[in-house]
Image (cartoon, rainbow, N blue to C red; front, side, top):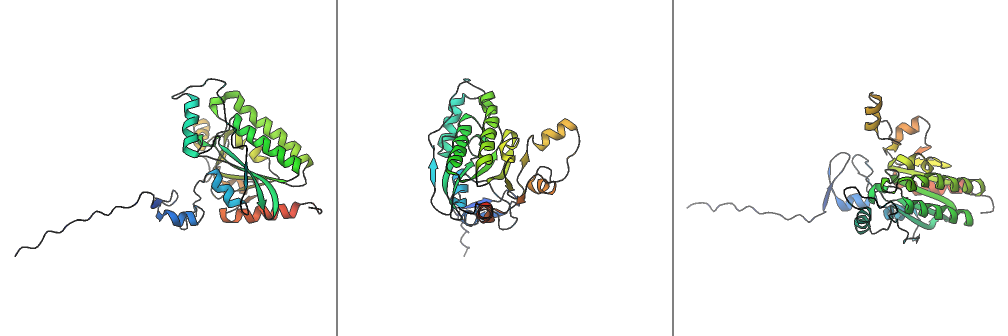
Length: 276
């Protein structure tokens, strides 16, 4: 009597159940990665987050979003492989945001704080006129209310589709930060995440009273490949990573993601005025 043929059974794995770590390439359950704040439990790689995810992790509890309707126009009528308005619409649908920055207000360590975050998923977190307007309004609110200010950067730099209108945001934001720092009782805390580059790194991201970075974040103006091609030299190991910048005195701390809220609260507590 012949044996019955073996039947292969195909198992359907639900989409999104597993993810590969971008650091060590290990296959991980998505929910485990999410529970660990999108940090790999094996190699410690910090995966990129949306702006809302970052603010949810930073604030003590519920927070209020400001100016969610601020969006970019198209004054230059810019077109490359796609018209700029069409590109904006695509990223608005993808992220659910109108711009590459989310401005929020809430409490950290019991203190009222104005905090905002770039969203790298929106055109690489590039800074255009809408992002500049959102940050400027946030700085003005922090100045008027005399509250601590936290900006989380995750950006490729100025947005080329807006030309000089994008570049002018560097000076505009830096000027308002000078006014804030001159009169505020509380600090401006700048948090640098992967990546923080271009015009954002060349301006307000490096102007914090305290400059904190997540581990192994890429931080710099031009990218390492561009620099190597320009100077025709091999860059040092780890060049432009947060640990390298800390070693050379350009930032104050490198802190794992889960410790950031506690450190921000501690910095506000240590620098607060006696009457606060």
